[in-house]
Image (cartoon, rainbow, N blue to C red; front, side):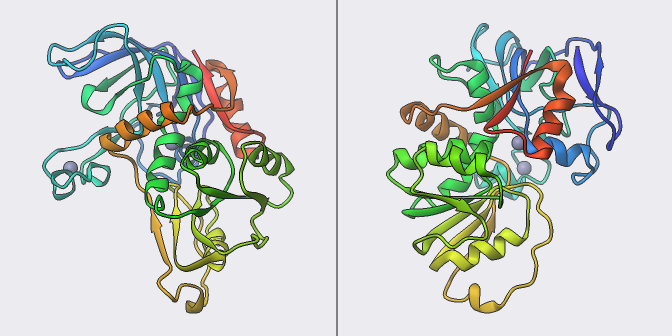
Length: 326
Ligand SMILES: [Zn+2]
Ligand SMILES: [Zn+2]
């Protein structure tokens, strides 16, 4: 069974589908859990164009390896496996050759250009999957595969900073905050005006300051990471970072950034986006997540409740991450 997207703009439909066939380089995974991501909404809504159709979405997959191709030596049957967003890179373009396969010209993405994990079974190329540490619960680990990984890639860009703002306190933010606090950073959490739940949630995670995104924090920040898909936050963040500060946009899609006076970018402030992930990000991240003893807050849904989970994410009714348990 799988939840299928047949046409962008339409709700997903539960369908009976065949178990995927694997080639020599692939692994077949019996899905245990698959996290829901804002990118899934961007695919349904058509903000990301030309998905494979019909499509099984879902790119935060945790499952048990049940079968592997002849050429797969780095994993064994029964291993707990994580399948992330990046599902293929060509290995020969200028980006792949310099270790930036996240920017590959011919990349394929799980749950977008290849089928993902809102299904009983999923397959993946062995080069792009991760072994999940043994002490991790599969449901709790699912949000690490995108929210965690992309959040980590964004964090790596500001890791030399001490005072870090995070805009949009959802799935990625709550994982990243635990890692940053483990590394002795001071986190300033910015939530949408009126979203008291998020303000409290951030406070309970031990952030240095928690407030609304139109407020000024008590100190100038060294850097800010934006996870909410609202372009005006880039301007808000530029106003609160200090000279030389970085503003990182962590999402795959964002509404237009309004024009702003050059003065707030002046003095070597910079704006940068984060795209996808590399295998090396994943290896570093899972080691660190284990050391920092990252705990995710999840809301569990059944496979046929996926439309509801997506709706709850859209309405902002979630604290932490939505995970489909198969
Ligand atoms: Zn994602
Ligand atoms: Zn490439």
